[in-house]
Image 1 (cartoon, rainbow, N blue to C red):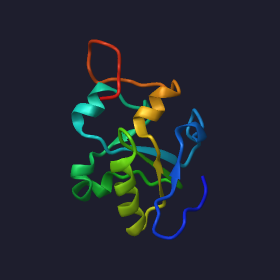
Image 2 (tube, helix red, strand yellow):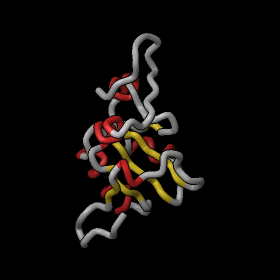
Image 3 (cartoon, rainbow, N blue to C red):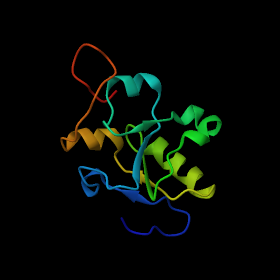
Image 4 (cartoon, one colour):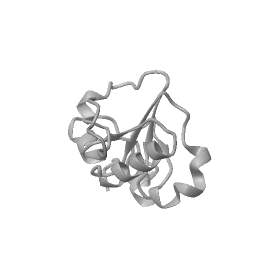
Length: 118
């Protein structure tokens, strides 16, 4: 991860994240419930962007907070918001699409079928 110019959101490519997040790191998935149920990273914490302000107390306390959505747009907005309000957050660019395209694991809340990115 490189430090972005002023006004830009810090970001990291999925390939740059270690397969197992180090201690003190957390992955925050800000997609909606149906997207989460279809498939998500095993260690992710789910707080949808639409509920973020009401659920700030559920944001993991972490030295490195990585924020992910489907393609990187919503997570960039959430990252900017969190950083403006005292967190040290980094956007996962390309989101879950990028995550799954490099073969990172997915789990599903659905009983039938393979997990997938919705």
